[in-house]
Length: 113
Image (cartoon, rainbow, N blue to C red):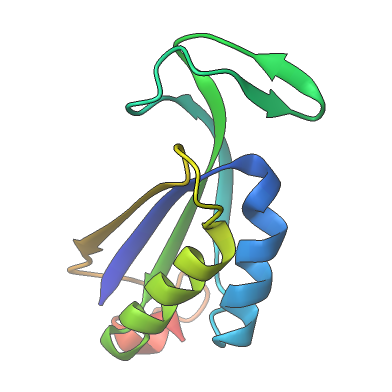
């Protein structure tokens, strides 16, 4: 099991979700976050408003997947988030040693679905 974490541009969220659903990855958690990478000081637009500064609005997606869904998940995020410009985002893949479904007590691959 792996935990895939992606930091993407907010305006790309719908496209990323569309690609994830097409790859049959449906269980996602989305959070609004602030941060920056190498583009420190680069202007970006968020909901039509120019933003400059150290911390820019981003979206963080967290997806717990079984091992056979890791690569399709990564490729779906890349396809949906890519625009060819600086600030497309990052994807992190972490080992997930344990997952428990609260309602049933199932663990591991069964808990992820």
